[in-house]
Figure 1 (cartoon, rainbow, N blue to C red):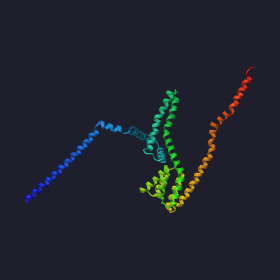
Figure 2: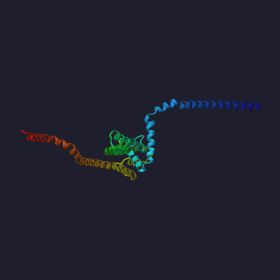
Figure 3: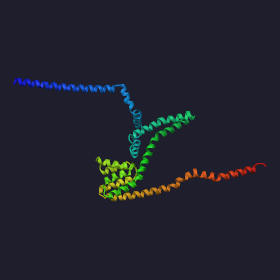
Figure 4: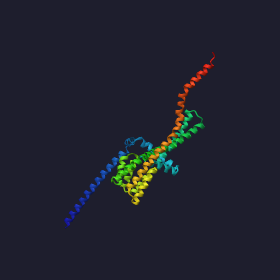
Amino acid sequence: MGTVGVLLAFGAMLLALVALQDFVLERRQVFKALRSVRAIELTPTDVRKRELAIPFYQRVLVPTLKGAGSVSRKFTPGTVTERLAKELVYAGSPVGWDAERVLAMKMLGVVFLGPGFFLLAHNLGGLAVFRSVIVAGLGAFVGWYMPEWVLRSKSGARQKAIQRALPDALDLLSITVEAGLGFDAAVARVARQAGGPLGEEFHRVLQEMQIGKTRGDALRDLGERTNIAELKAFVLAMIQADIFGISIAKVLQVQAREMRIKRRQRAEEQAQKVPVKIVFPLILCIFPSLFIVLLGPAGITIYQNIISKNRPH
């Protein structure tokens, strides 16, 4: 028994030594790998190459915009930030853009355009200091509001595109539901067929429903992402139909008919505005040209006759 115990103890010691050796070797390999990685990271040339491989706008412009955005946000009222965030949502939430970045662009516009207009007016234009200061204030005003104007124009164009495509999309949605498709499948079909901003919004509604949102919440979010009264009315009607158990096909049929009526009314309204809009081009551009063409020869003839009568014989 004593010999067996000694052998067992010796075997246990051998196993412990082998395990310890494997552990030490593994730790050495890990240490060597970490040391090599650290040496690579600490090499100045490699660090410089890695930094220069990043695009210029990510190395310089993005940190500059972030810093300017954080500074401008401290001095900007919360209502302005909320308004810019809402406009960004209306514009389709462009990738990489948020309210802070727009504020940064506004701040940089003031910093650069204000002194730039002053230098142009004072040095190149030769204006006095007071007038140059007024021009600089105008440049700062343009630099502050220009990013917001661009954002509003983008959001307005997107909302108009959604408004123009909405009647046809609702017609297709009503037809597909009446043909037997479910509401979700019909929305997917309309999203593929419509395309554009409205198709993107319908795709987002489907994605939100797939990740667990209810149909009412997804449609309610769709209404909040737009400022179109017709789309908001459609969303409200669909939510009420879902709550009270009304036939979706009938609701879609009514909504599609109303959309067609409103589209015709908008077209008639635009047609009624044409005579008023055409007055200024007529007065400023067309009438002067007509007067020159019609009265020019007569004026030349009258002038020549007057000169010939007053000329001494």
